[in-house]
Image 1 (cartoon, rainbow, N blue to C red):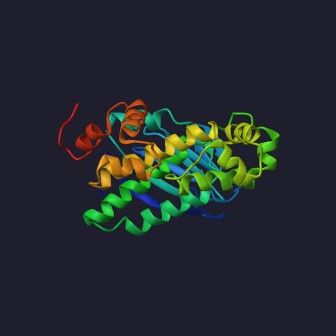
Image 2: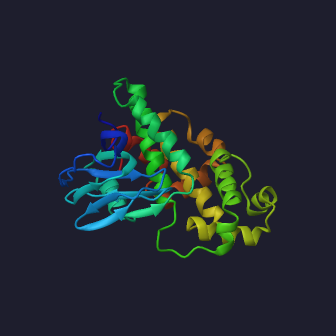
Image 3: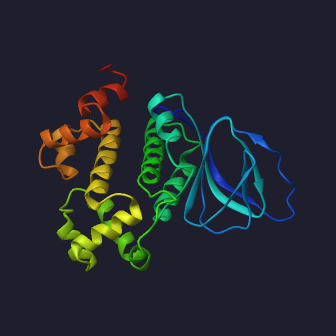
Length: 266
């Protein structure tokens, strides 16, 4: 199914049990993302290196790599083909493996894609597109495997997940550090330290990233005025929204919308 900037070749659950005939080595022709909801003894052998399947992690494989699956092994698989230079650059600079704290959010989006994959209405294509964009955004905002984590972040894991979920679900509201500290019952500066250790960015940085990600989707899917999108996503004004969007994305939201709709623009 063709979507904006990429094609979803496959989205499914792959399971290989003990006793299953060993699969042949495959030369990948597309980007492949795998998401693990359980620990497995197996994994993949990619370019001669074994990668175990670990619960709450993802793995990213790139075109040209050679891959063989090792039983027992189970994961969600998302295969993407893209020639969009911006998306290729984004995927090529993501860590090959990383921790996803809110794996349930990713799995919910993957299930949406599985349900939509065989539908060809314009509405389903737009929804599929937005699901993929959200998954890629969630991956890009998570910490790398080799980053040390503060011991307090591990102890307060559930609280930090609650804070992150609150941020994602209340983008239009007050998400100041003081407000999040009150919600989490953690001292604001301590919360910021733990959150940054877990997610690789401060609550303010993550809030901005999520707001810009939501803005991208709104600009693709809706005809709403910029002022309405800005207010809905918690920006103080349309000017503030446009300035923040351009700083992060590199172009103004009006030009982003025109480009994605094929209406030109710089």
